[in-house]
Structures are given as structure tokens and as C-alpha cells.
Amino acid sequence: MTLCARGIREKVFDFTCPEKEAKILDVCTGTGKQAFAFGKRGFDVTGVDFSEEMLRIAVRKNRSDNVRFAIGDAENLPFKKNRFDVSCISFGLHEMPELVRKKVIGELVRVTKPHGKIIIVDYALPKEEIKRFLFYHFVRFYESKYFPEFIKTNLQEMIHGTGLKFNASCEYAFGCVKIWKYEKV
Image 1 (cartoon, rainbow, N blue to C red):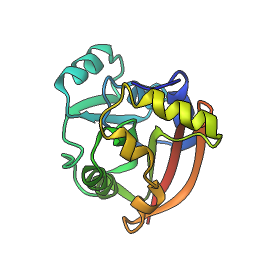
Image 2: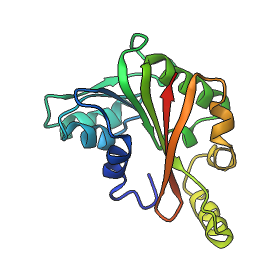
Image 3: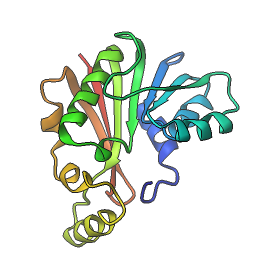
């Protein structure tokens, strides 16, 4: 799934720094690893994914009353407007064509409360040219057909006009993964 993902879930939690009693949405939750990272710290978490097979694994692994999972399409989230304090998508955007990515980001904005946080975690190109070259050519062998276009996309430009304000970002795994934090305005 992800290159050098060990420890990334805790890093995402620390970087997000959710307020006490925040309600958190984990979109494209897969087997629930990010949802569990938020949940083990006592947060109310809902993980949503399109794949019933992945959600079966998440439900089987779930040992928390504060973490729930639901079937749902990231393009049309089954939640009311302004429901969550934090909405997160980890390693999902690179699996989608550009128009779908834009719609998913719009859905994250819709379900997040005003001044809430939106966290995006995904691949990024390292700054050093040789690492950039090696990473790109290695990852494109096992990732979706959308990866090459995604990795060359300027996320800030794609986010422009969505109602989000860039807050901060940090790199992980030698710059191969990036965490972006936005605020819904």
C-alpha cells in the first residue's frame, strides 16, 4: 500500500493535533489503520470506504467502542453537512482520476465543520533529483494508473477555490510522503 508507512499513522495524529472530543472522519479508511490511530487516543472516529472486503478486515480488527466503520463512496459521502471536526484521507487521492479527486476534496469540505481540519496524506516527490527519479520509477510499478498524473499535480492549485486555507505540511519517509493540513473557512 504505502512505501515506508511504518509510524506514519502516529505522525498523522501528532500533526493533526485534534481538539479534545473532536469527531473524526477517515475517508478511504481501508483496513482502518488511521482510524485506529485516532481511536486509540479516545476520539470518536468514523471510517468510510467503498470496499466491503477492506471494511470487513477493519471491523474484525476493531476493539474500540469509539471507532465505527461504514460503506460509502468518497465522491458522495453519506453524512450531513458540517458534521466532523476533522476529516482525513490517507493514501487515497493517488488512486483516483483528477476529476474524482476534486469531487472527493469537495465532499471532505462539505462534511467538515467551519474552522475544522482537513488532513491529506499521500505520496510526494522528494526534493533531491536522484531520490525523486528513483522513487517515481519504483512506485509507479505497483501503484494505480493514476499515480503518475497525481504525483505531478500541484495539490495547492487543486485545492484553490474549495473553501480551504492551507495551514501547514510536513514530509515523511525522506520526502516520499507528505501530510497537508487545511482549515475549512
